[in-house]
Amino acid sequence: MVIFLLAAPSLSVAQENETVEDLVTDRPDATESSRAVPLHSLQVETGIFYESFKETESHFETIGYNTTLLRYGLFKNFELRVGWNLEETRTTFTNSQLADVASGFSPLLLGMKVELLEENGWMPEIALLGHIQMPFLAATAFRPENTGVDFRFSAAHTLSEASSIGYNLGAQWGNDSPEAAYVYTLAYGYSLTDNIGLYAEVYGDLLENSKANHFCDAGITYLIKKNIQLDATIGRSFTEGQDLLVSAGVSFRIPK
Image 1 (cartoon, rainbow, N blue to C red):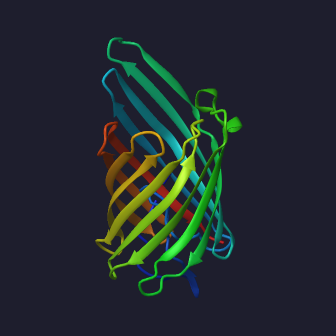
Image 2 (cartoon, helix red, strand yellow):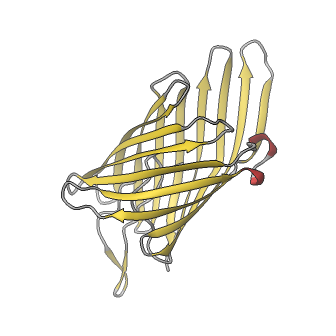
Image 3 (cartoon, rainbow, N blue to C red):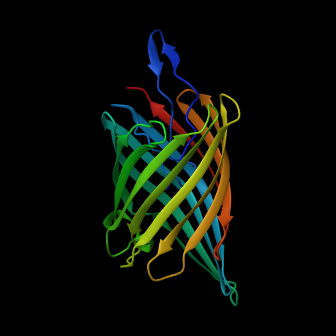
């Protein structure tokens, strides 16, 4: 799920003397931001996506009808996270006209994010994220036997008033596989205007006993209000597998 995001350019006056903090989200890219949501604020990040994998004897497609992540600032610099996706998968074999179709909810995601360090010179802003995936709350077709776990450190550097980089390092265990997948991401963001941001990213996973997967994507964000943002993304893999990823979504923060 979801990512490094361009922050809104500055604080602004919302209602008289009340200010609205920067809207920093974890979508649309794979790099998780190093910012927790503000104290007692609820942030909703949702969208849709289409993903296609082509292999020699099959074609695998996934449509995400709903990829919602809820983030709540429980304490200062600490957030709780809940995510649940509604997906449909379709597998078509080369030697057959029939398709194997499955749909339903993926395992419920429960997690947290805590800010560890503020940016200071060459030292980046750093946060720690962790999640567990609850298999018993998933549709039968998407239900693994074991609980999935992941963690990652998220960091960010400001390069200029208009640009920044974010990167993640971590590991995950899931899909009933005992081997760890070591995760990395690197994203560059550029504020084209006060409301429009662009980003480009590389990311992947390094499996203990299998070949690595490497991906790239790029996208755009549009801040229509200080607390509402639209996004769109397109990507694919460097390695054999994913030949197309497209997604679009909206993120918004409900005031305290």
